[in-house]
Amino acid sequence: MTSDAAAEGRSGPSPAARRAALWDVLALLVLAGGLVGVHLSHAALVDPDEPRSAIISRLMVERGGWLVPRLPLAFHHDYPRNPVEGDTFVYWDKPPLFFWLGAAAMQVLGPVPLAARLPSALSNVAAVLLAYAAARMLWGRRAGLMAGAVMALAPASLIMAHVARMETLLMALTAAMLLAVLKLWAGQGRAWVWTVVLYAAAGLGLLAKGPVAVVLPALAVLAVVIFTRRWGDLARLRPFAGVPVMLAIAAPWYVYMHLHYPAGADGGGGFSRAFFLSQHFERATADVYGHGGHWPGFLLGILLVGFMPWTIFLPHACVRLLREGWRECRERPAVMLLFAWAIVTVGAYSFSRTQLPHYVVPAVPPLAILMGAYLAERSASQERNRLFAFGLAVATAAGAGTLGIIIWSLRWQGVWHAAYIGVAAGVAVILVIGSVAIVRRKWRTSVVLLVLGTAALTAFIFSSDPVRVYRQFTTRHEAHVILRHLRPGDRIISYPYTPYSLAWYLWPREMLNPPNEDALAAEINRPVRTLCILHKKAVLPRLLPRIHWPTKVLAGPPDRAVVLSDPQVPPAGP
Image (cartoon, rainbow, N blue to C red):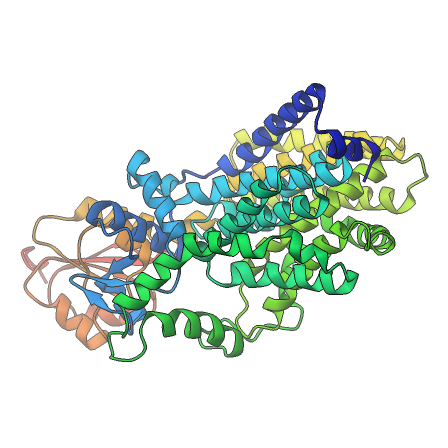
């Protein structure tokens, strides 16, 4: 701990320190809020996760029954064991906290994509401030600012901040738990306040993701206690006082679901078996959902890519900080806890048979805190800093390469706009000035320019969307085509499945799902005007010769095909 941080920990922050902290928070809010705000309100919900979460929250608002998440019956084929209630079925695969937050946002903003994504965005901003607070407590103000900036710019967490999923919420809650443990172990602040924070965040984590929100942090804490032999640290966490707080928050919902859904739709196991056994134990031990088969180190690779450009500094940072942590592990186990928190998160999921890229997101805050300490210490050092200078040079070169790839991609796709010229030029100028600062050994200036350049480049990526995510992975365009041609009494067919995004955009209209191509042709040949969306382009040439009525292809390859069949239109002459 730096002298400033140590003094602050003993006597509390001075008025000047409080003012400085306020300015720090405002700066990080501008940085993090600006980055998560890019495309946050984009109208395209990306299949399947975003529209599914949005539909669950929307049903809560429009139908009531906030206690139990539900989905329309059209998607019951994805969850055949879940109980059916009217024209909906119970969605018990995930706890309800994220859906509650989305529904609360929809109460204010209406049923719009921004409301569905807002909980993720705000959770990411909260995680940035929590990383700042933890690093500032351990190593001082500069380390806090660097940790907050690293956290705000890490692609892994920033991408998920734009997605209506609960992973960013889980990340923020586990970051709050991490800060509370550090505070309790350091004896800073009022113990009862941080005890409540720790176990309230744990209880909310149970409602956000399930037992994993508590089990993995507990394993990290236990590993550090065993390694350092600081058995008293367990007592400092006040489990006997805190666990009742956690259970008071989370247990009522689990008990309600267990009592009200003792069996599934097929008469088999109910909520408890499906949630705890299928969604946790079976996911860990068997590839039951088709998310396995990854190469060893898959999640570690995802984390390293998702931590760029800071990954370039990670080897040197780990060596220096582990050396410090090893020397002071008995007196100050904070560094070892940060490493353990990240290692347990990635390691536990790496041994699981089910591995998804977003599983590594909760490991970002502890790494950001460690990286903040490293950047603050290296940028203030008067040493020659060869490795640090090399890292800065590689990061700058990587930024230049990324900028070039984005420009080429946008031009190749024919979506380049004149407005992009100014942004690209600005990023290029920052990279050039940063290169000059590296050559002149202006380390602090180099780090600040790296942060600014990464922020500008990241905003450019999100705003230009070079991968065309908001076009490829949604049915928004096709839904608008259907709505433009839809008349009262028309039928809508979706084949071979109904995407969640299509249900969102055509809400609350029902759609047929024929089981095969013969049934599809039979349904279209009924004497009713029909709009059909085909999600497999190969079906279109086989289907058209089998339709009896005049047919028009409203949207075709390379997009999904939308077909209009109208028996009232006179057939064309010979």
